[in-house]
Image 1 (cartoon, rainbow, N blue to C red):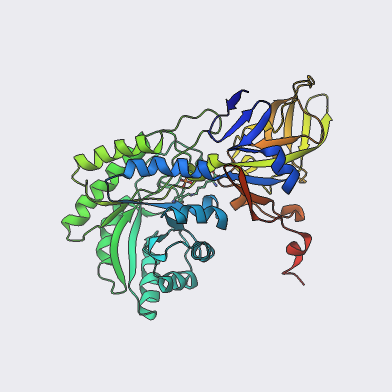
Image 2 (cartoon, rainbow, N blue to C red):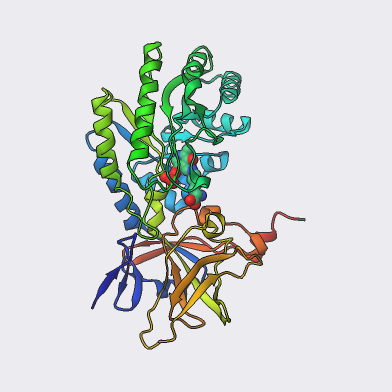
Length: 424
Ligand code: LLP
C-alpha cells in the first residue's frame, strides 16, 4: 500500500489510487451523499488550531475563529468545543455562534457597517468587544448602549497602513481601504471615546489582509500598533488587549506561509522586547484554521473537446465555490479515484454549468478522466460554502464532517422547496 500526501492538508491523501480524508474514501462520500458536496476533516481543523495553541502556551491569549471563513454550525461547534472565541461581522453570525454553543463573552464584533439592531443584539448577548471601525460608529454605539442601559466594551480598529502583499481584494490594512481608523487619527479618537459614557475602552485592533504568506507585514503591523499603544497609554488610557486580527495564508498552490507557531514566536519576541509580554493577545484567524480542512467533491457531467480548449464540465460551479471567479484563485483539482488504465490525459478547463464565462474552477489542468468520475477541489474549507449563492437557482451543496472513519451530515442539500419557500 502506498500513501501519497497532497499539498496543504496532511489529512487528505491517496491510499493506493483512492483519495481519502482521514480514514474515509471520498468516493464513498460521493456515493452516499451525492455531489456537489463539501467534506471537512475534523482532525485537520484541530491540527491547525493546535499550531496556534502551541504558540500561545504560557501566554495570555485567546483565539477568535473568524467565522466568515466557514460559518456552518457543525464547523463552529468543533471550535466552540475547543474553547475558541469567535470573530463575527453580523447579527446572523452572532445568532449562529450562540446556536453552536459558543460563549457570548468570547465574541468580538468587527465590520464597518454594524446596524443599530445588530449592536443592540450584541449588547443584549453580552459580547466581549466591539471592534469599532469609524468615528461615526463610536457615536452610534454610544447612543445605542445608553438607550439599552449597557456599557459597550470597545477596541478601535486602526489602519496601520502596511502592505500585506496579497491580492488587492483581500488587502485591508492600506490607507485606501474602507476598513479601520487612520493611524494618525487613532490617538484623538481614543481620547474622544474615553469621554463617551456608554463606552468602555478595552483594547486596540488591526487586521491587515488575508492569505498573507510572509512574517514581515505582521511585524510591521505589530510594531506600528505598539507605537500607538505607547502614545495612547501615555495619555492615561489603558489598553487591556491587543488584537492582531487574522490573515495567515495557507498552501493552495505551493505557497509556504509560516506555520502559526513560528509566526507567533517571532511576534512574541517583538512584543516582549517592547515591554508588552504580559498583555492579553487576541487573534482572529479564519482561513488558516479551516481552509485546508475542506474539499469540494464534484462529478464530471460532460467532456467537451475543442480546437483551442477542452472543457471538463462538472456539477459544482461558481455559486458553490466563487473564489476562482472572484479572485482568479487557484484550487488544486484531483480525481477521487485514479484510473491507471486511463491513458487519455488531456488539458482541460474545469468549469461549472452556470451561464457565465467566469464560471470556471480551474484552468489548464491535466486530467485523465471520463464522464461520471468524481473530482475533489482542494483547500475548499474557507470562503467557499460561506460565500456560496443560489445563482442560476442552484440549491446549495450538502456538507459532511469527517472524524476518523465516521462521517456526519452537517448540512443537507438544499431542495427546490428550500429555494422558493420565501417567495410569493
Ligand atoms: N478579521 C477580520 C476583521 C477580517 O476582515 C478577516 C477576513 C479575518 C479576521 C479573517 O481573515 P483570515 O484569517 O481568514 O485571512 N473571501 C476572501 C477572503 C476575505 C477575508 C475577509 N476578512 C477569499 O476567499 O480569499
